[in-house]
Image (cartoon, rainbow, N blue to C red):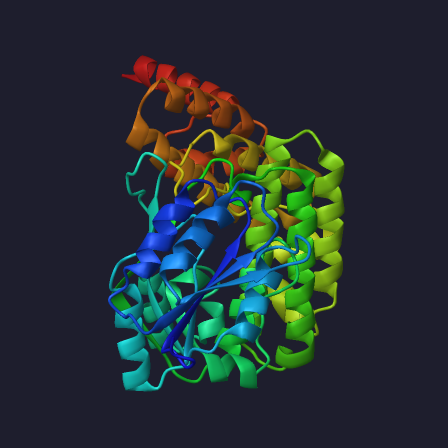
Length: 422
């Protein structure tokens, strides 16, 4: 086996399910043969390592690292980074798979451009084998770069879709976070902040496979604890290494908005409201550490509400990338905005603007689906809109098809008067 392969593929392994066979075969079948595959056994119990050991008996390119205890995907990948001998590193999840040319196409582009990072594309595959609709991140990255935005504000998920120069990671001490959620976001923040040469190879495809029992679907209180730990690690890096950069404000803003959106989603999924409150308090404490807090609050109403009032508002309902957008999720989000507006009339201008946007988005989805469910949602949102000041009801009526009860009454009376005049 080559002691200096072109690519090292690092695969953390903890109960990945039957998808491990497909993952192993997709790596062994790569058109780029000069690779090593490092499987990190994170003390799983589902027998997946038996499949890996059997493959290793036939393929000397497979190496196995065994953790002494379960430490999570981030620390497992870090162990793989330390052991890797390849010029470039790839990170593949054990329940996913890649196109046969994935590594070769990324490697060729990376070498040709002497790139620190080269990114492929991701497709999301449901359990029944169908490909889910998703917004392609690569398009947003290209557009953002053309507008002069830094990479760390654009590329903050889909870490598995890229190839990373080993010397670049080692020289800059870039590793995954220690948290069990969002450790990949910590890794990408550091990598994209330090990267000087980046490009995209659209033809290299990574297949992200949905599992209903995966950590992505975990709605337990532990999810919020782990997300908070991950955010703390990101803020540590931002405060220590990025505080003087103007563009870091945009990064923090997007991260806070995303986490509050997830928090509200989990609050609707579980009964443990205390975990959500602890999460909100923890996020607020981390945001208050940010050296450019006033600029951040000035650019994000969501962050200002969190810091000044301790209230978590979501700018839209949270949904996983492979999930069908359910319009009913808008009801609770709009209700929370109405509650805030009624309790804090001094914020009426900014709150009404966001609330109107939510109502317009929900109205568009109701019109698109146009079924009994959408009609039910429309009535529930109308009931929330009826709690608003009359001027706000008029704005909603002008922009959507909703007719809040009080406003509906005034319109009905006006129509009757017009009939008499005619």
